[in-house]
Length: 190
Ligand code: SF4
Image (tube, rainbow, N blue to C red; front, top):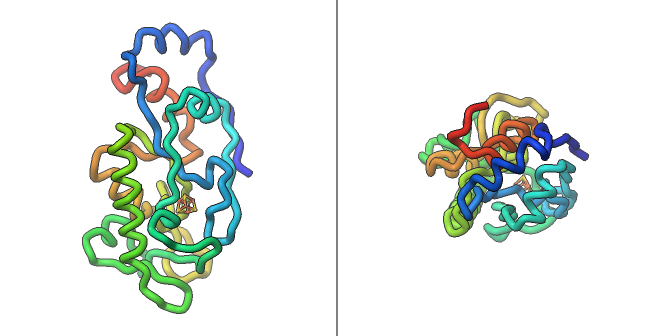
């Protein structure tokens, strides 16, 4: 289970919240981070964080699991982006997403990414909080396609598509930076 503390004291945040527009930023969030058991192994990856809990209570969070939205089952075989490539290469058609037996599941994962993007745009999400390491939701690292637990720097196909549409993606490890943008506004100095 992941855990983090909100990095900003509420007393410092409240005046800024009042000064913001009537429509504070919304956030697309990987459903598994919100405790939903949608991962390939049927588990969740719950991220317990004060800021995230408050944004949920404020109605500013839109949950999505791109892989489930693409029609993939729970559980399902794990998949990785092949040949140490990354999400942008998958979107260009230059890389595959494979299961351990070599099956190419790229089209389903791209469909999931497109569905997640449509959801984010429909709700006006400016930011996304996504699960690192996933071939869909990875933000800072993913696995290299060998199914041997080897990581490399890169993002998943959903994250890459969101970034191509100017939706800023964060992993749980960057929650303090995300909280600043969500609660202080993108133009407010640190
Ligand atoms: S696709 Fe994203 S939301 Fe769905 S289980 Fe994988 S990491 Fe979680």
